[in-house]
Image 1 (tube, rainbow, N blue to C red):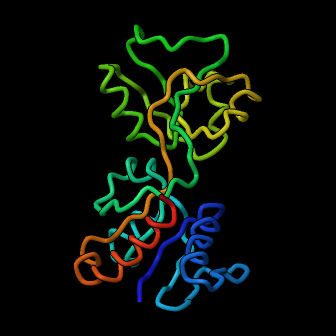
Image 2: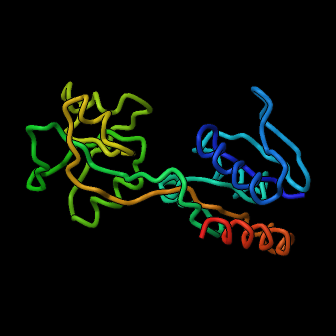
Amino acid sequence: MLKVALPKGRIAEDTLEIFTKIFGNEFKFEDRKLTMTQGNFEFLMVRNQDIPTYVTEGAADIGVVGLDVLEEHNADVLRLLDLKLGKCKVCIGIKNEDKLDYSKPEIKIATKMPNITRNYFATKATAVKIIKLYGSIELAPIVGLSDAIVDIVETGTTMKQNGLKVAEAIMDSSAHLIANKNSFIVKREEILSLYHKINDLIN
């Protein structure tokens, strides 16, 4: 039995569709249920940000999570496969009339990704003050809380609607299949079998 941690929402649906295509049975969670057992798999419906923790701690053998989350958490897991789902970018956003001014002694950045932000600006030898927010991040530069934001951008529509533009792209992200390091030793055959089946389907 493999325990699989999936992020709530579209990525989970797309991943279960992959399982359905591979194994022929429909894989679907019952309404509001957080676990589902089917065949040799037990699926756990988990908040996206918590998936690295579930997999690192061994509560799940494998998981599906965005590369941005892996980078932010610096998760100690095996990265097995880019599933090419949920493609997006981590970008710096600023007001339409502004420029990103690296000459300032410190740039104020509002974000829910402090580690990615710090690491990126460290490569630019630029000091940043991180303002940690959990939602409505686009509001921060508009009301003067920050000079810029670092956030996930899929289409850029939300930024445009709020008078912001992308100043720089930090990284590309998409959903990755990851594994617990110990599980990969103990359940190596099961995990590799699944890996090859998914890889054959998507590539």
